[in-house]
Length: 299
Length: 290
Image (cartoon, rainbow over all chains, first blue to last red; front, side, top):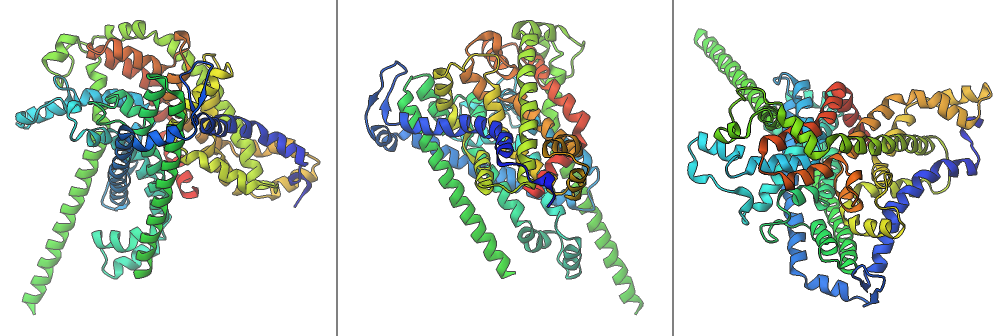
């Protein structure tokens, strides 16, 4: 290796430092300080009082928090189906020789991913609007007038309703990930599969899924992480309502701190969210790897 | 014999028909999919040009006369010029910093052996999975206590930090693909490490850096949550934050709200459709390497 590739240790440090400093300041330091504050009762005034593990004990009993956590889990499940799953299907379609205008579909379907979540939330609030919403208008046109209602006030299906915009926004992104993953699959493998008489659905199930496994895992991981951190859509669409029906963990932590000024409890919530999210990601990875792995062995 | 041949031909015919139907069906599904992605945006686009009564009469019809005054009103009520300037300043500085840091870090990861490299990569990877909105409260407390909240540069700090992970990985994998002989030749010519890095490799990495810049432009321009908690000063509000206040105050005038939405999407849309093929290719390249 030439001299050009052997800089001094100090130079390396100098180049790495700005990134590490700013990243640590915004990611690591707040985690550590939140951990410290989580042992205090603190309303924002200079005086904090140490209360040990009381905040964590309260979280364990806090039904609103666990409801919010459950909503995150449900949204993640909807996300895995509606974002990763559908994206896989659309990517398979886009791989098919029969489909025209591939570039057009790719470009159009990725566009919502580039828009601000807050604007997506406004857009869907309008779509779900009682008097002026596209959704109710559509129902009126197809003669399902009796279904017309104020959608975001329904507490039953509210989590599904707020998950749809998320899918709508992100499906194009996951489609691109899948397309990239599928394109990397050797063409010959697919041709052999076709000679063996595997077509359409069978080809997708037995050939494509095992081969696309790495892409599916990466996409699922990103999807889990994104849904566990969801905040902006819910904040802008329902504010967690009706009641707490659509609240998610991050929104609950936000409200606890910024509306009720319980910074100690809010910090404990932050630590809890972090721990639960990483736990879910770990479980998800383990499950995905095992199941896909078993399939790979079978066929 | 002849009968058998007829049957074979008929079978082939029906197979062709089935294929044709399948082809048609696939195309129709994909067209519907794309239409559902774009129609809501077209809807706010033309509805923003209607009067309020026109919109209440029929939400779906096209405007009879193009009513641009909604835009004038939305610009005035949101103070859109101020919002755009704030967003542009924060975004420009953040993107520049992200590109520079990602280049330097990515280059060192790809080319130089140093202690703790693997640990550093994992540390940055963690940023992709960490639930950043759980950090809203602790980041707010940290910024308030250190006096970093409510300054013109406030948002640049989290925007750079949260958008480093992916660019670093993208740059590192791109530079790994550049042959090492280039730097060796540069060393023979007597160029030092930094000169080689910035005058030889930086221009060669321009494609990946452009992709990174565009994607992080979207991310910074669109960010809302940290702007919400870190800025109290009205004069510093960014476009998403300003739109949020605008909506809560003027939510009954839908065409006007839609005009505001169109305005806030516009910069992103222009950049996206100008560079769409590069962006799509960049995301796909990142996916394969990620």
